[in-house]
Structure formats: structure tokens, C-alpha cells
Image 1 (cartoon, helix red, strand yellow):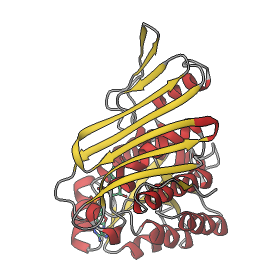
Image 2 (image 1 turned 60 degrees about the vertical axis):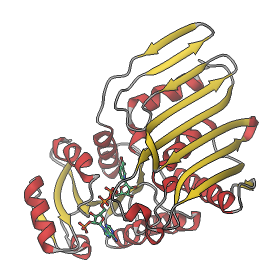
Image 3 (image 1 turned 45 degrees about the vertical axis):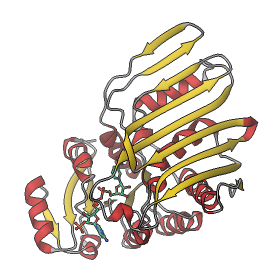
Length: 327
Ligand SMILES: NC(=O)c1ccc[n+]([C@@H]2O[C@H](COP(=O)([O-])OP(=O)(O)OC[C@H]3O[C@@H](n4cnc5c(N)ncnc54)[C@H](OP(=O)(O)O)[C@@H]3O)[C@@H](O)[C@H]2O)c1
């Protein structure tokens, strides 16, 4: 493509930008042209640090920048919906960080805004763009483990000095933050769950510090999830079928890509090349904007995410009672 790169703007100077910027700058599909922050000083310092041509001292100013075609929203979870809608109404395509929203109705609202504007919107689940994930799906669907029966998905870490993630008003909490990956992994392999059960441990600010959940999918496929802010760093995805097991040690971060397939006593390591999942994500979105391929994720996936997260929270609030996942 090269000559017709999509011109991107960053809405905030979030820490996660550091993972996304190299892919935007090195890409032949994308060009990083602007960044916005809540203050002029921070925007200018950040633009200087990262070599970004224009700095805007407010999010509004970025949305008024006629040169920006696509906006990457890396705000804390709470304002994702408001700023995604505002960006779409300002004529920008939107890549919104996960989780897009806490409630399915909010997801509908943002996608309706995208449809009205004739623009693209995608939830930023970078792990879905890594070749490791495609290989896992291929193995499961190709019968490598027989009939799918059980999924175990984990993402935990120890949270230090992070007010936004502990703030209920900013939609903080471990299920929103990292549990959403466990939900995404389970749904990718098993479809949409019918029933959810969860138990949560709340912290002093009222957000969940630790959650264990169970999802029941059609065909009696079960998924068990755990996520936390008060445990050591752990991630993993185990997919168990009637004839074997697939283990992905780093499914979300893909820091050490590779999949272990065990059938009886046979254990095979399936090698996966390293890849920049953030670059693959922004390249996919840029190519989708140019009409060259579909965006990896759309309304149905974001809705499934919000419906499942909402059901897990409703169950956890009800002390672990089984609740129906909205469909
Ligand atoms: N895909 C991934 O691998 C990944 C990894 C980590 C996080 N995330 C997601 O990315 C988003 C940002 O996470 P992060 O840890 O990078 O965030 P962060 O470092 O806390 O930054 C959030 C930014 O949002 C802006 N902001 C606006 N209102 C704010 C408020 N009330 N409190 C705090 N910041 C506010 C600030 O930018 P200005 O000061 O410039 O306005 C701040 O720098 C979250 O939705 C998270 O779930 C994704």
C-alpha cells in the first residue's frame, strides 16, 4: 500500500501506547500523525518523546484534526464508550481498547454510531491477531483433541499503584481488565455461553480483585476462568477434548509463543514464530479502512464479550448463582 497510509491519532498518552506506537510507525499501512492529552504540556512532551508530528492539548482538538482518519482510544475503561461515540461522530474510524464496555447496550450504542457514520469500529483484542491464536483454532477445529469439552483460562498479576484500575467509576476491576481475555479465549473456541457463574473478592474501593468463573456453552462445553489483581503474574489457556489437550503457556501476551499438544503419552511442541500482535492489529484495521480486508473483530464479538462479562458480574453480585447470558 505505502502511498495511501491510514493517518492515526492517539487519544491519550496511556502506557499501552508504547506497545502500539512501533507498529504504527514501522507499518506501510499506517502513519502516526497526532497525539492528544488532557494538557498541552503532556501532549507536547509525549509527541517529542515519540516523534509524533502533532500534539493536541485536548481530546476534542484531536477529533477536530482533519488530517486524522483513525483514532486509537487508550483511555481507562470507563470513558471508552463516550469517546468512541464522540470520535465516530467526528468522522474518525475507532480502534477502542478492550474492554469496549461493561454492558451490551453500550456496545450496541457505539456500533450504531459507527453504522450511522459509515465508519469502522473495532475492539482492540491484540491476542486475536497473533498467528498463535489462528493456529490454536485450526488445531481445535481440525480435531487435534477430539470433541471439545473443557477450557481453562487464566490471567492474573499483582496490581501496584494504579488508581484507574481500582476505580469503580472508571469501570476498573480484574474481570474487566484481564478476565476479558479469558472470556475472549473461551468464546473464540466454544461459541456463546448460555449460563455463567462467578465468585468475586472485592477490594476496598469496591472493584473485584479476584474472580473465578464458570461458563456453560452449548453441547456441555465448560470453561473455567480466573483473573486477579492480587496474585503473581500468570497466564494460560488449556483446551481439553475427548482425545487430547492443548496448552498455550502465553496465549494473551504471546511472549513465548508455542502450543503443546498432548494425546495419551505423546507430547508435541508446536512451534509458533514471534510476531508483533499490536502491529498485526493496527495493520488489519488500516487495511480494513482501505477496504482491503474485513476487520478481525466486529459488533457480534464485542457484544458477546459484554454479554458474558455482564453475566459473570451479575452472578458474582448474586453470590455465585447461575445466571443466563443474554442472547
Ligand atoms: N491491549 C493490551 O495489551 C492492553 C494492555 C494494557 C491496558 N490495556 C487497556 O488500555 C487502556 C489503558 O490502559 P493503560 O494501563 O495503558 O492506562 P494508563 O496508563 O492508566 O493511561 C490511561 C490514560 O488515559 C487518560 N485519562 C483520561 N482520564 C483519565 C482518568 N480519569 N484517570 C486516568 N487516566 C485518564 C490519561 O491520558 P492523558 O493524561 O494523556 O489525557 C492516561 O494516560 C485500558 O482500557 C486497558 O484495559 C490494553
